[in-house]
Image (cartoon, rainbow, N blue to C red; front, side, top):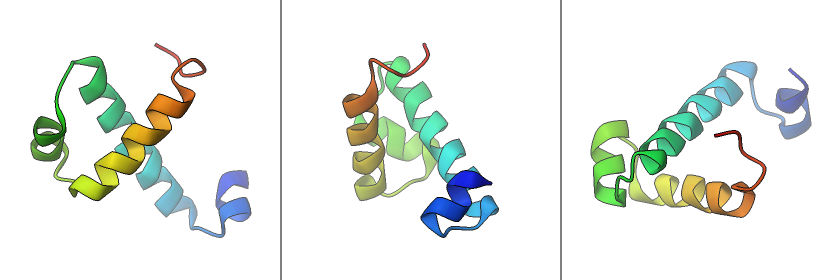
Length: 64
């Protein structure tokens, strides 16, 4: 709820972003390339790129 307020997004949208992030993270952990991630998640390439940037920038802090 706090994230939704701070970002001015609905709780549902924040939940969706978290689910998408976790899907991309799982794909990365399973050594999938961008095209495979696109097929598995159904996301557009530019959105996958954004999640990949977040994963790279914060990988030391992310749980395994």
